[in-house]
Amino acid sequence: MFQLSLYQKVSVVSFIFFLGACIPGPIRVRQSPVPFPILKTQTLPPHISMSLSDEGTHLLITGVESSGQSLSLLWDTGSDLSFYESPSAEESKEFRLVGKRFTLKNKKGVLPESIPGLLGLDFFRGSCIFWMGTELKQFPETSPFCEHPEAYLSLDFKFLNTKKKGEHFYVQFEYPEGHVSYGLVDTGSSLNLLPGDTRDRFLGEKKVFLAGNKIQRADLMESTSTLYLFSKTGIREEYRNVQFLTGISLENFLLPGDKDREEVWVIGLDILRTRPLFWDFSRGRLGIVHSKN
Image 1: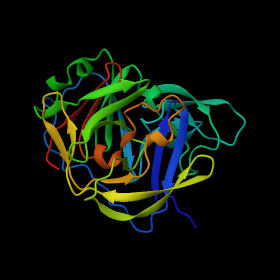
Image 2: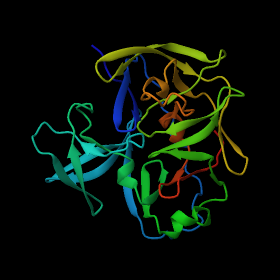
Image 3: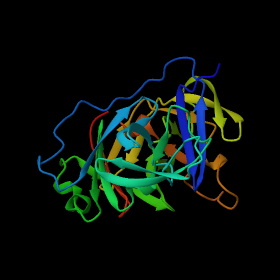
């Protein structure tokens, strides 16, 4: 029996592709570093605080309420649209999270049974967020925290080199040595999708399950050299022993006419969960609190 012990997902435009690999052994879960002084002040501008549950292969936003039930929804910045999944005939339903009311459409046959829905990029439109461990703080785009996060965060806060295409955000990285590209910032992907290096450690061949009952084989690798994310100040943030899939990338899913795109890679949870992350969806800015790996 296949078990989706790795939940790997890639979404492009409005087409959502879910990838799951059958992993015989446990995948190392990178935990967030031990908390250190991050805020210059304990007083932050008005915001909404959400709780996250780190399931290892994915992140759940907890405390979502609907029809008297408490739900946990997948946090997925690789998806344009938020939705829930129900076998009922209803087209949409109202939800509430920390006093915020919103409506999601019902989509069928997309998510695993254990996940009732997801919150994508549209849920955070017109805001900025600060994510550290199990805390996710959302501020309105007019907040001074969104305009000048460096005024509230540690001096180790650095803006990353990023760009936006459509609704999606990409961050500049180097891996392997000498190969510089951009990767989709995707909290819905448990692992990264990266170009390989002949020195990488091979951890096994995996079956990756695609939409439409298609199966593709991919190699699970661990980096032996350092992966870098580039900051606007010139500091390169280091990530070691990164696990990733190779032999497969977003280029497999691009629509006709999009093959000239450079951004065919994914920066997933294996990297993202290790640094406190700032994300301004209105201004297209991402930043991290610099720390040693």
